[in-house]
Length: 435
Image 1 (cartoon, one colour):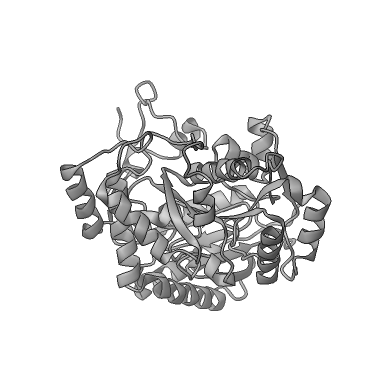
Image 2 (image 1 turned 135 degrees about the vertical axis):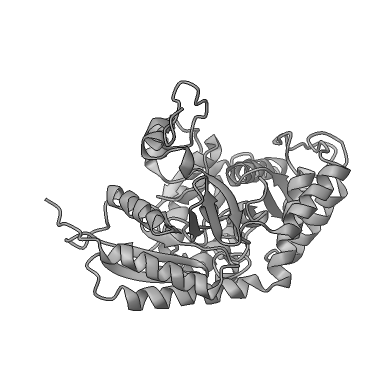
């Protein structure tokens, strides 16, 4: 194999969502990340880059955390695996982690069921909601209601709960029993939500699933809207699900994004930051009332996987949660987000492509526009991302915005570096008007 090229005949890996050949055309073996330390990654050629996207928002404690690595190593030596699918007892670390999660969760979420990804957590919560109603004698409650353009993961039930029609078009037909409502405006009171749920027939609805802060653009759902949702669900026997797979563990300025509104759900889905990216783990937190509906001799919740509650992953999560709490990193994330927002707002003032910046916790969204003031096309966002990497900076982008979502442990000096490097790239953009 020549330096800087791939041997296409022997390359066996099938990449994620982008075509593998496209990725290999744009990069070579020297571009692979081989080491991480703190907020920095180093590639095979020895070049460093500041990871201002924290992996994919999940590496909240940065790289090279000895406390997490040692906890995982210790657990792997003592007991690497225990089956939780059938009647076996879990590893002690799994029980300990469940207690820790219940301790920091929004009020009322006292039971924890583990899985392995955020999408699996959403799928489990959807099936749990339907089974709960069946177990309590309400078999007609099957409908799961979400919002248009929402994203809840890639398993089939999670994909159906998502409101992104392109996913339904690509992978359909979707399973029945899902409905999507318009997203609320910034000043929404919840009256429209109530009217639409009334029209659907609340007696048919098993659950309402919401992202308290939208992961695609960092926009919190209005507090009055969430309070109206909570009140309506309580009044009509509907389970309220919060998908916090992305927003949990300090990313949005509270331990969980539910804390922004003070609204507690009946089910909450977690992943990503639960292990700070050091292992694959997800969880569904539930109320005691929901748990009781399954804790009988005549019920079973037959939705589980071999690696659910994996002891090594649970050890990573326990160490990560203790770090979030003992190092006051949720407050640090708020400070970090404000610093980046204020610096970018000042440095980018007057840049042709700059449409504004906002921060929710350590999620900093920068709106970039073309010459007509419309969102910058995706092709331009990809070029921006590549230009930032050449400037030793890693950023994230979505169809809605460009994002800096750093580790909560990033230093103020590193944040200043990120702001200045990002500003340099954006200031060089010369967006053209649409033809």
